[in-house]
Length: 46
View 1 (cartoon, helix red, strand yellow):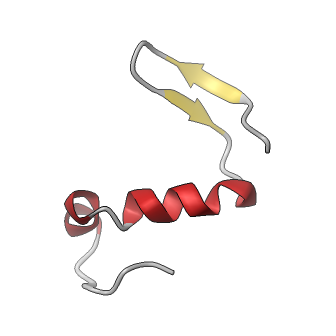
View 2: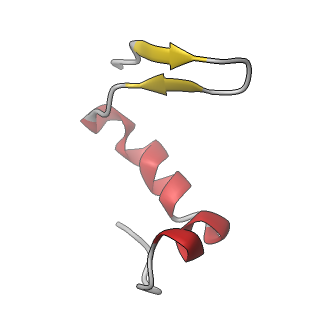
View 3: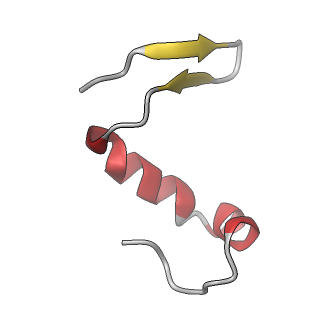
């Protein structure tokens, strides 16, 4: 898994976008609290 850290702080770290992180992205964007702020589409991302 490619997780080269680009920027890091005490609470978060940023990594390059990559296909091997798709499952994590989907969990994040399908989180109801995040999803309602990021889109008007009620369907979850797949």
